[in-house]
Length: 258
Image (cartoon, rainbow, N blue to C red; front, top):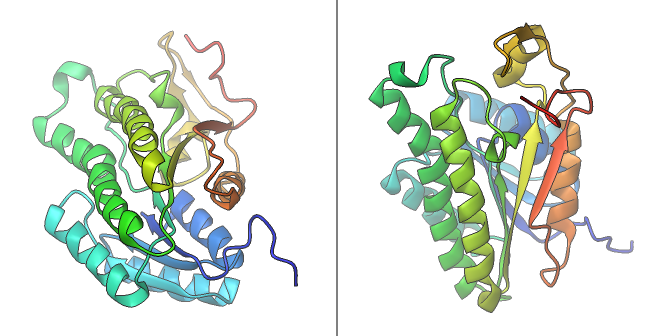
């Protein structure tokens, strides 16, 4: 059988937040392409169920490892387990993240701010840091990191300051990672997602606050399209990179927002 660009046989992938929503769709696509997939998250029961289901659906190896990406010790344990089990990591998908309560900027509790920053930004940084160490030292050297940005990385929604700030920061992390990784065959790109159907977007399809102050239902798309895009990015040789890609529901009011 001829090996295609999207063939992940012999490769190891980590998908944070891989047990639900977009992360689950990405994990399924990678597993079906032959990757050995590690899914991480904070809820062991959700992860174990997802791993069993994904293994059955893809016929591949899907392993659940519980971790809180915002906790340095927890991330250390996650990567120690990956290194011990596989000895390498070919792909990191920084997907874990949380959204923001729809409240005015001045009313956002500090605890919510710190929780969002920890999950969306600190977690991506910590995982990238550990992936860098492993990818630089493994043989063959190198790997790929794909960050889950958001269309909020360029254009915010109303009442979304913490979430938007972290997604703008992810863009900076992506560019710095791509730059610092050049010497070591580590490629880094970002996928900015608009309205992929998940638990986080349920309210969007029912009605969400617009920049003009009105509520309006927005179109959503199947997260499988995000997974297909990630699979394409992951399937490129390390000599090529998609630095940024936007995948969005065609009819969502993003272009021309405001």
